[in-house]
Image 1 (spheres, helix red, strand yellow):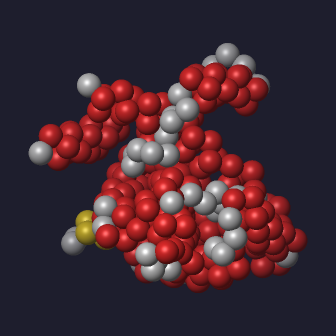
Image 2: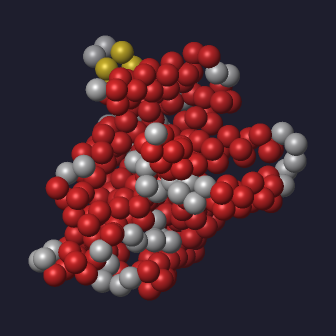
Length: 311
């Protein structure tokens, strides 16, 4: 019961944030929500399935480019665009998964890295289709129609609330997945894959299903980020972009459901604080992250949660 009230309180707080924050920070928190959801989708693989993917940005970028193509073709329904993004991302995730899920650890990571870089190379080189290194600007973002009202997403506050709404929906979906009987199979596979195999568990099938779910949600994140940034670029597909959810997950904690979202918040807030003093924020962020990882091996929020539950 306490968890229920804490969740309601959390939603109320994040829902009224735009009232008290300047526009700049409203935009930062929109980015935190999108990237936090992206990190949570990645954690379905790493935290619950024990798989480290360096090609996760491929699904994010596919969602972003699909959004750009559709909206520039005068699609007027954002819901339809989101559904198409998810379907296309799911198809690519199924293809990636069929090629990679039977491999473990470094082999899985390298296969996903190679497949992801193939998608990046295509987007970077085929300028006539993807805009090349310049990417594709989104020329038309339709308003959201609710009864007789039209809500524009060009307003930072409206964009934040839209991102928050979509993020909450996908968080609830992931919560249902990880707490279902399927989620228990995932945890069993992570703890002892051989034991699950000997009792009749289909390891490859379980991994493939989770890979597709994870990639589909990552595609939805690409949809949100392309709306937020009004464009899709090859950078969204690069392996270095795949490193972001890895860092956020490690920072927040892979053993806590909302840990990656908290890691995203820490990452972006630290970035903005450091930028006030120097442009070399990546160097100083790295020096901060190293002791955090050393002293909080389960992530900041994972360690805090473990401490609280022990008492």
